[in-house]
Image 1 (cartoon, rainbow, N blue to C red):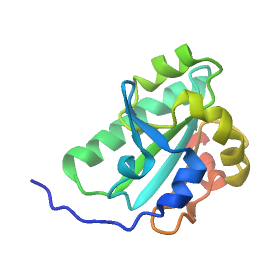
Image 2 (tube, rainbow, N blue to C red; image 1 turned 30 degrees about the horizontal axis):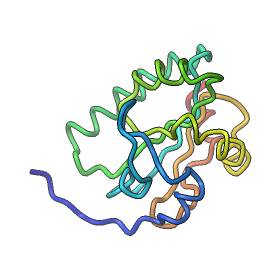
Image 3 (tube, rainbow, N blue to C red; image 1 turned 90 degrees about the vertical axis):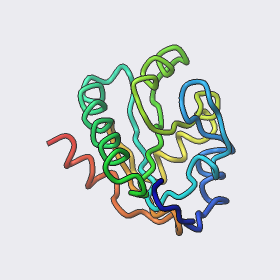
Length: 150
């Protein structure tokens, strides 16, 4: 089995930013601190089913994430989907294609606007990387979006 380690997650920051729970998959909701256990970096993936560039980028990101999990099981990156979908059906069908965590659709109304403003998200797809220990931005949306879109 892979080695285990404990990263001192800034859980109060992530609970207030994302809400109390995250989805592990379409059927399983767990406490945010449990979903991010052992994460060293937290990637926020702002995307939506209706966005063509997002639908093109998501499979590439999923392939990278699954490769990391297979080859480097203790890589320390956890991704959280922040949906821009307008209804729960679209959210669920799109999220089923993703191997990472997600903010539940019913929590998005409380946190999405603040996340967009806090991290300077001006379009999708966007990807923001946070330090899990401090909650500080490691890679801002402007930098990652430039990499993704060009």
